[in-house]
Length: 150
Image (cartoon, rainbow, N blue to C red; front, side):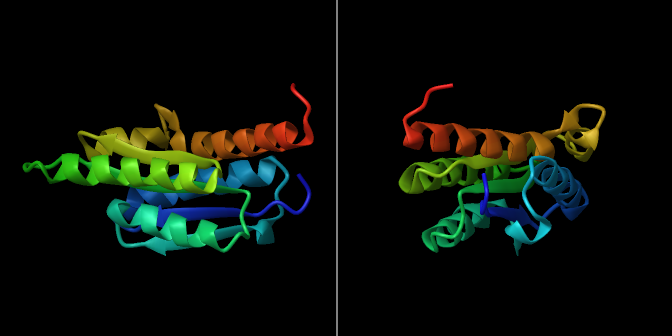
């Protein structure tokens, strides 16, 4: 997909986790063939801010795909549910609004250990998986636009 640009929006909250997610996502996009300068990274304060940043970025028309990366870890109050639900809803709404694939790399875990395990640890690399999903979906949509079916 020549000329393809990707936007990666990353939450600073739980940065020990999200930085690892970003490393995985960035490596996956480079493996897929995107040039380093074709991947723009935007940091936002927390998971709740992911949708608005994605929306604004996709509104520019520069990107064929995006990746949302964040980590919401359960605490002692229901705050976890509100942030996770609204972030997920907003990411989905943004993808549908712009008909642009957004790789969903928002971890929702009970503990920091679970989050780290999913950010390149024993439970996989959800950052890389989110980037791969966005890239593969962008390719599928490109084929659809050309009228071919693979």
